[in-house]
Length: 165
Image 1 (tube, rainbow, N blue to C red):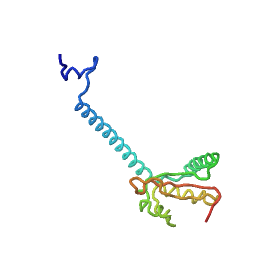
Image 2: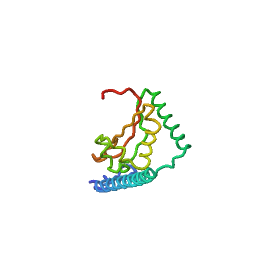
Image 3: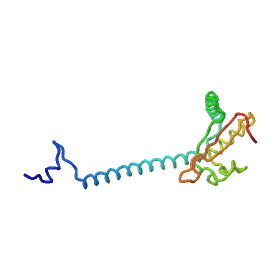
Image 4: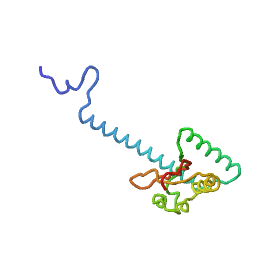
């Protein structure tokens, strides 16, 4: 008695998927993963837009706010020093918070602070007013390169010995 192809389509109590059904299943799974990734990208973009909106709005500077920021910065500096580090990133922000999208920072131009807006500008002013005279240095650099283009900017405070120039 010859076996029919249908006889090969079952094994024990489970039915085997045909190759076409398995390909369809794989295509549906790939679409589901792509849809999930798109949803995650949408959420990330909305979070980024909210971050930009928030960081664009300057904080009201009060003695209490200055004291709060000072405590947070000093805590970060102390923690980094305990780890043997001589530099800490005090702020990360999207390049759209620079009037030139980070071009001056990327090119290490002397007037780069003039391109800052919103809270990044306030962070620079805080460093200049409260930290610079105490020997802390500030540098800014592009720290993220999505698609090969400048992305996020980092502001770094350092206190170690100067090396080189």
